[in-house]
Length: 65
Image 1 (tube, rainbow, N blue to C red):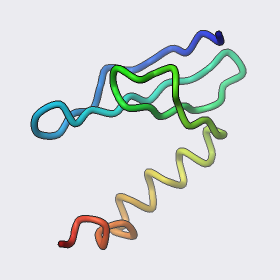
Image 2 (image 1 turned 90 degrees about the vertical axis):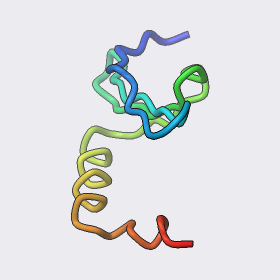
Image 3 (image 1 turned 30 degrees about the vertical axis):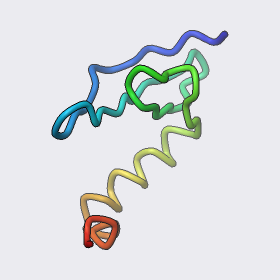
Image 4 (image 1 turned 120 degrees about the vertical axis):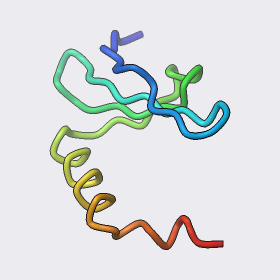
């Protein structure tokens, strides 16, 4: 198993927590807290783009009911 340097969890209400980390090659990983063995891995640039797009409001439709 590859070692991932995880950041502290980012949590919403209750137990809805995500973790972001990096592997030894510098790739970014995102996982549900407590399920870090099942992470989504991509480049740091892909993570930067995701975060920028979320901050720009491009995912706000996901929050609508």
